[in-house]
Image (tube, rainbow, N blue to C red; front, side):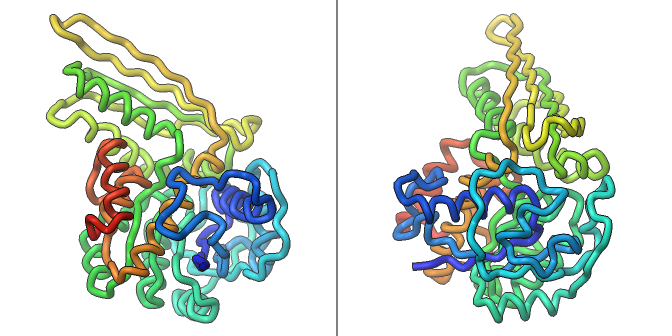
Length: 351
């Protein structure tokens, strides 16, 4: 059994995903990179990369196995895959050019080109890794996926799965839709959400919180110029965990520091009050390899999308999106999302 996957944006996250999946195919004794060990009969090793799209001339027309290592990518290299037979094709540009001069020469394609490539490669699921700020480009790829009948996994912050417009269109066509904005395996957002949820459950009143992120990836350089969607996505994810409470929250990517490479460092502060109005202060620092931190969740999302395709389920996958993404159509706490996605896998809920 295979899951035929296409990638939009061949950057660090795509590099980590391809390296990890292919490494586990070639080293069968290793545990697969996923949180959900099995999604029915599907394991991470069933993923086959069949298509890819980018606008950077350094990557277009290369085999995906080569394109993932081209600059400005700087994800850690743990495995060099053999030739995959998936050639990177140009896609629509629109607002998809990242900030900070990350792309020097652009090669452009059209939505029609993308649709033809998806058809010709028999791609089943398209994962959108475009840079933050690329709203119009994200919608162009969503349109291509819809026209091709391909499930769309929106791993970036553009509001696609959370949009009533796209929810309706994907539901009408019977095509699965997942997103928005990947919630990493143990990232700043899921950790911050869990802390806020714990405080709310224990009757603690949250008064104010912040989360500051720094990193050295191309994504962080882009975020220095275009971060509004990311700020909105992360803030909503955290604030919904303390239902009924109002508190100040400042959550933003702040700085690109080149020497950090693919590392991300997040600083979190929560100030709250316990019974009697006495103060509680929590400070947390988290350091991760950013692109690699997203792999397990995207592997889950891809297999959940495949399960929906098998079952003929279209439109937004609410449980899968709550489990895998920061800004889903319906927000859930981590434990609620986990229970919901297990029910979806077992066929006890249709979305």
